[in-house]
Length: 147
Image (cartoon, rainbow, N blue to C red; front, side, top):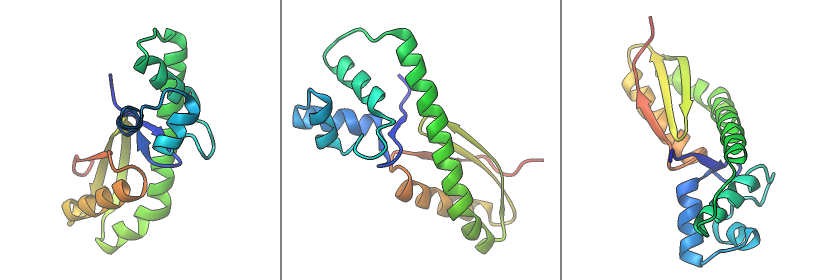
């Protein structure tokens, strides 16, 4: 099972939500939201939270429902990462005299193509801030410059 950013508002991965559910014995959506902090803002993640609860109970999850949850999660995660990059990474990259050439988001993995001389340092700085401000479970991979 690929890990994903479940609650984009609170920056919580499915791993963090599952851990909170186990740690607090959360077995209802309300208890899971209280234990993890997920689902308290825009509520877009609540179907995924329901899926986590179903899996925790050992229940079979409808394939189409799971597929729909994954599509929503992927779309919302990509939007959250791109919005953060547009708003926060541009000045950071400018300080390193680098540029962001391309972005890929796959679950909790963000791949950035950064151009310029100090791309390694820029990637490290952007990765740290991305983890601090979007989700601590994100992995940011250095893939160098394009072209």
